[in-house]
Image (cartoon, rainbow, N blue to C red; front, side, top):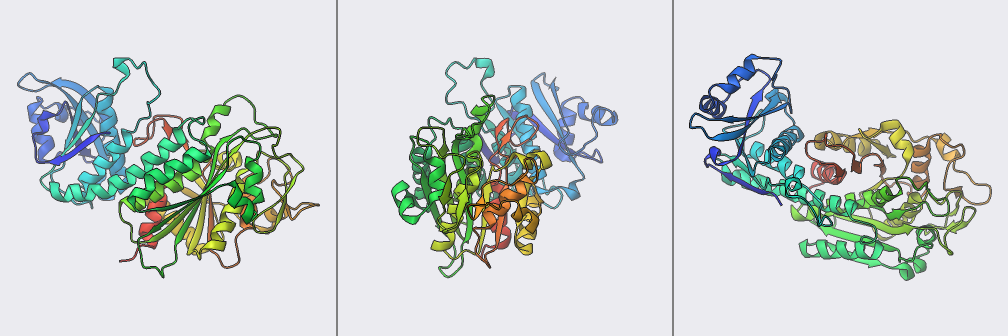
Length: 504
């Protein structure tokens, strides 16, 4: 893991030095000192507006020598209009500094923060820069046994030079807790399916969360059968792996405070079942547990930072496999709620898992609100691509609060419609409902949301987040997330709890 320090130390001890420049192209005292040491190079670049404009996140890296002849990597990064900087933008700037240092194979990167940046105090700005670097430094390479030296990352230090180091360390501890939740979610999504399956996943949750104060309960198929969870059990019955239901409880507030409840779809591998998917890119279906990873990662983040709230997380863990005992199109299953479902497509399995999970949650607890997360439909990516996750909600205040927290965390949500016409589309002639809508290609994400909504009791505030386009990052364009698993949802859920449910 990246080593991070906040000390009033020698900036020039680092192999890469970052300079922050705003859109007015003004240099602070630290930048002016660096400029003087490097023959006025920064001033010359600033004079040429075509080379550097100081826009937020703009970066220019040069290998140069100072007046003493020492070679150094100079990273010039724009911060735009400092008065309008958001917290997530400072994190992204920190991620950009780290990535630029990594690209030039510097063993260490340093940046000086000599005062407030925009509305952020020196300590908070320092912590945000470091948090972004930490998120950008994530890697998953445990199965790579023949890495060449030139492919190995050598950047293992990120040093923030600040006189307010004690406050910076304190601020960073909170942000590090959130980053560790993101790391855990990324690890889970990236892990290979022969290693991460329902039983091993449940074991990981207990091993990682119980020591930090989260109570973990695991139900197996016998317990789920006794509870009547026919929808979730039907999904997993084609697999040799036993399905699991994991309940996580974190209590950071008074016992009489209702819990905020998160539910995650955890299909550890999704072949589609009998309605089998095309073989091309089927390996990507290990990501179909991304919603559960968001919930588990959020529980870790909240516990690590000692959030003053009561939170419950439930994840349904299954494999959707074809086999001699697999669920068939045409089957009818009885859910824990007693409602029946006609299975028209075994590849519409996530909603079946969530149906029993949200029913269990409402039967066992008295939720303040219920938010489920799932890589549920390809239809949501047709509508929103990988820019937004879809947000469906039966309560206006809940939707408003989620959207606000998504803006603050930069894990963006877009409100999607719930309407009785979509509910009509999942009617079945032989059961209470079908697990897919009528016409192919029509309102797939909305009909899926309505399916889950049928299992939400009257008066319960509920939101469904379809994160199908958000779980995996296919490029290196995100400054705080390398190509691969994003851990989307961890920062959002943490922000949501912090903004709206933590007690003073």
